[in-house]
Length: 142
Image (cartoon, rainbow, N blue to C red; front, side, top):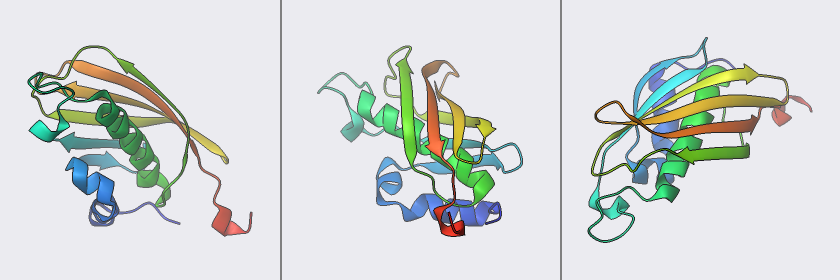
């Protein structure tokens, strides 16, 4: 499968109900570098605890995972399952939009490793993550 163009990648992003629930928007990508940037806007229904105005950590982890997956999709043109995900919460994300930036460190025959960061509207990194994804194409006779 070939690397998708921007329209196809955005179509794949919007096809997933969970990605649509999160309101993720494709901002930028580079298929050759397996790099992607996604924007998420703050909504009160993402709140960790009533009145806290803080993003729930589970949603932050989900955005990290989706961004990692889509960095690989930007290169391979197909979805890949998550093998492992590490998420480090560095500071609270309080009533702010988020920019997810993901870059594949390595895309091997069977697994790929991606570094992901979430930045708030001020550019501060609120979450650092690393995902490992199963890249073997089972549809290719494997």
